[in-house]
Length: 261
Ligand SMILES: NC(=O)c1ccc[n+]([C@@H]2O[C@H](COP(=O)([O-])OP(=O)(O)OC[C@H]3O[C@@H](n4cnc5c(N)ncnc54)[C@H](OP(=O)(O)O)[C@@H]3O)[C@@H](O)[C@H]2O)c1
Image 1: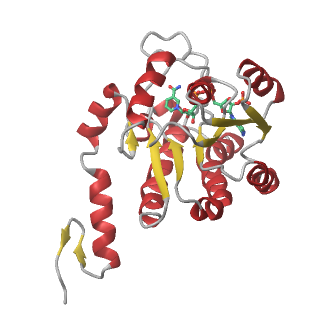
Image 2: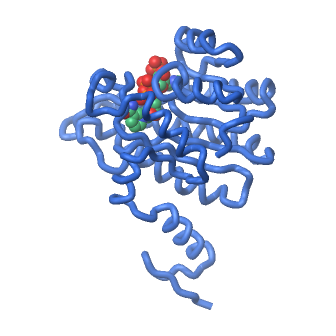
Image 3: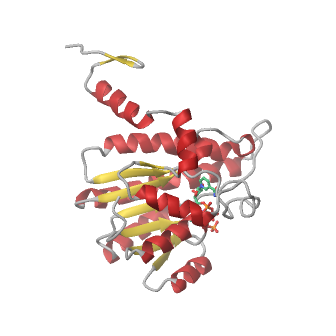
């Protein structure tokens, strides 16, 4: 995507990947509005980046989405991009009784929130000459880490949703991108921040912006691309082909296609 001249809404913009993307895009001259559920981190980030705006938005609060999105569009009619960086990752144990509050919070934040926010924005986006949705999944959506099983399942579902959303919007002005981070040093979980196995945030952001500036719809840093290509080669093209055949009534059997007429 073009990395200048946009108006971005970035959820989870008060910390980690969201904050770092917000600052990098702000420095490139984009109008950036960061969203988060706590006022102080948002105010700190906005104060450190004059011209950046912020809005308090708990992405799990459907009433807040319904209230805030029209206000944002009224203030920023050129709002043409959203990056869903808000996320939570908590340890769980699906080999035992699952904590229902954790299950609900994990899916509400990582899966339902981006779907709801995209849904609230889509009518506006479709009216623009071009707009971009950036969903942030995870490499853990491809190979789950068993002690954060619910998180991984939510990210796998977000990836599936993204493939479908991209297909449904294929003939519109709205592009659907997916950033698939590997393990990155942020405060997502306590251990992440100083774990040498995790990628330094600065390096992740630099490589992500490089990939984001291309026409690729799946935005991967090199170390993640290698793994994704080994695990799910050609998935974007396969999704397009499968849906094209299915919609045209020519799909015969999974993995095969033939003209019926
Ligand atoms: N770091 C990694 O290794 C990694 C790998 C793959 C994918 N990701 C994804 O990258 C995204 C960013 O995570 P991060 O690593 O930058 O961690 P982070 O620093 O913890 O950022 C997550 C942000 O989401 C916000 N948030 C959580 N629940 C929210 C809600 N209900 N409403 C609004 N904001 C909410 C958090 O704010 P609070 O302070 O209020 O909680 C925080 O600012 C997440 O989607 C994550 O799943 C990260």
